[in-house]
Every structure is written in C-alpha cells, then in structure tokens.
Image (cartoon, rainbow, N blue to C red):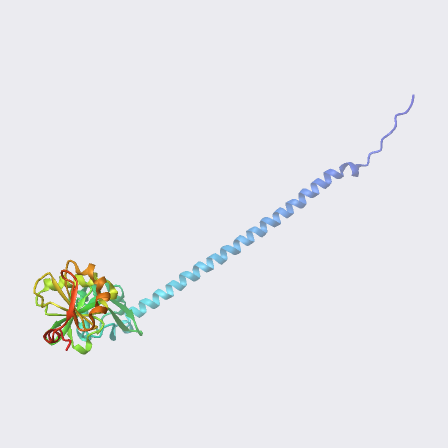
Length: 285
C-alpha cells in the first residue's frame, strides 16, 4: 500500500495574514487615538482662546463704562463754555439764552437733545433752519447754527430784512453794508400778499435771469403788475401771469434798446429810454 505524500505547513506563513491584519488594526487604532487626542487638544486650545477673547471684551467694555460713568458724574462733564458758530447776524448771547443751556448742565445731555434744541431755536428765529451740538474741548459745547438761504432783502425803513427760502422774513434787520449785493432788494412792499406773489414769481424764473435782477418794486399801478430793475440799468415792466414766459426775450431786446431803457413786457414787447424822473424813482440816476 503506497504512502500518501505529507504536505508540510509553515504555521508562521499561515498565520501571517491574520497577524498582519491584527497588527494593522492595532496600528490604525493607535493612529485614530492620536488623531482624536490631537483634535481634543486643538478644540480645548480654541475654547481657551475664545474664552480669553470674551473675557478681554467684557473687561474692556466694563472699564470703558466705568470710565464714562466716572466722567459723567465728575465736574469735568459740566459745561464750562458755549461757543456759537455759523451765524453773523443773530445775537449769540440771545441764542444761548433761548437754548437754556446752563453751566451746571452735562455736556452729553445736549448731544441727545439736538432735535428739541433745534426746534426751540427755529421757533424763535425763522432764519435758523437747524442747530447741531458738538463737543469741543473736554467740557466745551459748540452750538452749530445752520441758517436758511436768503432769496433777497426787504427794505424796511433805513434797514433791510432777509427774505428766507421758506418765504418768511428774518427777525433781525441789517444795514446796507451787510446786504449781499448779489441778492435782489424788494422795495415798496407795505403788504405781505403782493410780496409773496412777486417772491413766488421771482423764485420761478431762470437762474441766469435772476442773477441780473437788482431790485423789485412794489410801487405798481396794478396788483398784477411787476417791476424789475436790472443790474445793467434797464427796467422791466411785466405781468405776474406772463412774465416767466417772456423773460427769454430779454437778452435780445436789451441789445437793441441799450442801457437805461424801459422794457415793457406786460402786454406786448417794446422799449424806450427812461426819463430823468423814472431814473430817480428807480435809483438809477
């Protein structure tokens, strides 16, 4: 009987895949644990940094709040001086008096009451459009006055009052030396109704034409009539309803008419030289 061949098996070779698999698993497990440990360390470090930032922010805000509170309750926060800027015609002392700002008041109180302060001053002085409060030095209050635009001046006796862009008159009168020569002067207006009508008309005219007007006269024969004295020495007579549509012809007409002419645009369009009495009446002599 023949013997069967004997197969030799190397146990290490047979067990090698299993041993390698177990070794790799242990190796991967160690790597995984190392990664998890590194992630936890990074997360803890980030949390510590975030905590330090929050604590730093809280401490900064607390210090600033304490410093602000300390300043507010200290005498340094009391108003020492008030400086009024932005106006030349209005009385500074009167403005401060109307505003009711006192030396014992706190500077920051008025920084949050600007709207009320602005309304209070504009009710007293129509020429004030708004008022703003700024902090100057440590305890100096700067009161910035923003005045309304001036459309012209109303001759009031020997003085003049500003005509404001809202149609109202300024409270204070100024001398002729204080009048802006680029703005027209309204003379002979004893009633407010004709003044408002002529002012509305003037405001609607082209700027290039308005810049040439020196004076508007209320001494007219009819309420519908308007008289304009120009800076070039001519006088225009027109109708309130139609003058706006006719001023475009002025430059052409004045070239033919010459200086010191009366240009009538009320009905048609014609011109003639001014008489001596008319020159005197319109202040052109």
